[in-house]
Image 1 (cartoon, rainbow, N blue to C red):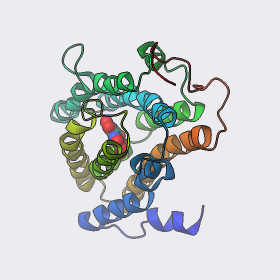
Image 2 (cartoon, rainbow, N blue to C red; image 1 turned 30 degrees about the vertical axis):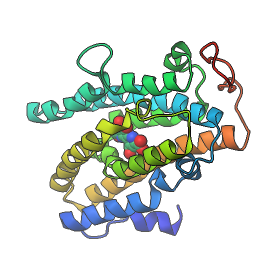
Image 3 (cartoon, rainbow, N blue to C red; image 1 turned 180 degrees about the horizontal axis):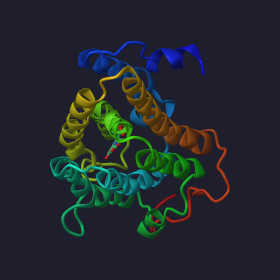
Length: 260
Ligand SMILES: O=C(O)c1cc(C(=O)O)c2c(n1)C(=O)C(=O)c1cc(C(=O)O)[nH]c1-2
């Protein structure tokens, strides 16, 4: 472990809630994916259509697994008030009826990019690192303390800003996306702050001892690493050209008539 790693997470004496929140925000500033080269290339219009398609295809797996992660977390909440609050996340992603919700809106993006739904939904063409990182998140939420599980969602404190930059950058630079195909992100600008507020309130009230606070900070670092790994994998395979066997080849699984 490097010394910079230790300094972000180490808590010698219990912090007051404001100081704990400041430490969490510091981790976000330093380790969230808004700094990743793939995110910067995406928002600056430096990617080609195949690379944007690869991003949307792989990110679908994250979208599809988030409700499974949240159902796993909900199953551990023994307070009905908390379950009621947490379940809004399931509804956001799954919708109240077929054709609604975040997963469906993500498919509007992959449709708009010309990716065939059966390939996207099968998850068969995603990168191995996408699969491993997303599964690691679900397993973390299942296996760690409830406090760590809730804290791992705190990256959402930082998502509205990166989403805003990403959406405006993509609309400005790519003629193959539109407000309509990027519609997934609009509701997230309200949902993410609401969800992050809820999780932050829990963490501020329940992480009181130094060891609990250290665990909470480490949980946020872990989650930043999950998101970073997803973009690392895309960078390696589709920017630097080291595509693993079995991963999407940039040409198959396109709707007929669409240009690769
Ligand atoms: O577009 C993004 O940069 C971004 C980031 C994150 C995040 O920070 O975890 C989420 C999302 N989007 C998102 O759309 C989403 O539904 C979501 C759920 C969660 C979570 O940990 O429960 N994070 C995120």
